[in-house]
Length: 97
Image (tube, rainbow, N blue to C red; front, side, top):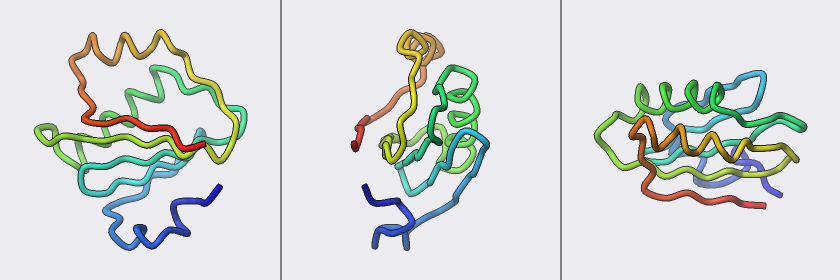
């Protein structure tokens, strides 16, 4: 699996945010995540990233999300209900494994 930093597309990066749970890359209209090994992607993490995405990319533009799964980690599936309950939207969602 190739890391985002190794891609030609990386030259178009707007911002990188590194956290204890993983690294998030922000491009125009796109967020790519690389979660750390063994983490659990939950609502607390999602809220952090949503806030940053709105800050970096704007709240009124469509946003796509790609999970670049270079490591094994877990997701709390019921937390997606919280995402939609708070009226957040994704134009596109993809997982690269």
